[in-house]
Amino acid sequence: MPGSLRVFVLFTLAYFLSYFFRSANAVIAPDLTRELGLDAATLGLMTSLFYLAFAAVQLPLGGALDRWGPRWVTPGLMLVGAAGSWVFAASHTVTGLMLGRLLLGVGMAGILMGAYKAFSRWFPAGRFATVAGWLVGFGSAGALASGTPLAWLAEVLGWRNVFLWGGWVIFAVALAIALGVRNTPQGDRLEPGPRAGGLLAVLSSPVFWSMAGMNLFVVGAFLGIQTLWAGPYLYQVHGFDPITVGNLLFVLSFGALVGFLSTGWIADRVGVPPTILALGAGFVTLVGVLAWGAGGLGPAALGVLLFALGYTGTVGVILLAYARLVFPIELTGRATTAVNLFGIGGTFLVQWGMGAVIQRFPRTDGAYPPEAFSAAFGTAAVLGALALAAFALGRRAGRKEEA
Image (tube, rainbow, N blue to C red; front, top):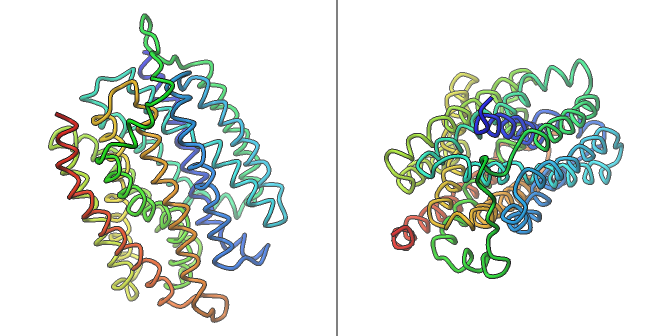
C-alpha cells in the first residue's frame, strides 16, 4: 500500500472511533438517565466534558505535532482514550462517567489534528481541503455507527459492553498508527516549527479570530446538537421510539458524511471563504427552522431537515483547511489546533449551555416541553448568525494574509 494511502486509511479508522465515541451519548442517553437518574443539565455537562478535555489538549498538542509529528503523539493520546472507554463502561456513578468522558476526550484530541499535520506533509496544498474532507467524511461513518447500529448493539449487548470492547478497538488502531505511519515521505524530514513565537503569530492574526468565532458558535452548535441534543429532542418533542430516533440520527450523520466528502472538493474549486459562508448561512437557517418550525413534522420531513443540517454542519472542516492556507506549513499544527480549540471548546459550552437552558423549563412525565428545545436551539441560531457576520467582515484581512 502506498505510504500516502496508508496514512489516510489509518487516520480515517482512528477518526471513525473519535466520531463514534463523541456521538454515542445521543443514543444511550435514556439508558444513562434511567440508571443514574440524570437531569438535563447533568447529562449535558457529563457529555460535554469530552469536549472540555479535547479542547484543553489542543494548544500543547499543536506544538507537540509540529515538533515530534503525529506518528507518536496521536497513538500515545489514544491509549488514554482506551482507558477512558474502560472507565466509562465500569462506572456506576456520575463521577465515574465524567472521568471516563474526560479521558476519552484527551484520547481522541490528537486524531484529527494529527491527520491534518500528516496530510500537510504527504499531500500538496491544492488537494488539502479535498483530502481533509474525505478523511472526515469516511471517518464520520463513526457517527453513523453511533445511530441505529449502536441502538441495536446497546439493546443486544448492553451499553457497558459496547464501551468495554470499544476500548480494545482504540488500543488496536493506536498500535497500527505507531507501526504503520511515517511523519513524512521517504527522503523528507520533519522540520519543527519555532519553539517560541509560533503560537503568538497565529493568535495575532485578525483572520484567525474570525475563524475562531465561526468554530465556537457554528461548529460548536453542530456538534452539540449532533452528538447529544438531537436525541433528546427527537425522543421528548416528537415522542419517537429508540429505533426511529436512531434512524433519524443516522440520517443526520449521513448528511454530514456526504458534506464532508463533497464540500472540500467544492472549496478547492470555487474558493474556501465562499464555501464557508454558504455552508454557515445554510446551517444557521436550518437550526432556526429546527427551533421554531419543526415541531409538527413527521419522520420523513424531519429526515430531510436533519440531512441538510448535517450537510451544512460540515463547515468546520473547511475552516481548518482555511487555516492551512493562511498560515505557513511549519505552523500547520499550531494554526489548526488553535482554530480547533474554539470548535471543541464551543461544543463544550454550547452543549452544556443548551442543557442549562432546557433545564429551566419544568418537566412533565420526565420530558421537557417543546419550548425548552426551541429556546436552546434558537439561542444557538442567533449566536451562529452573529459569528457568520463577523467572519464575513473579516474576509478582507484573510485576503491580505493569503496574498
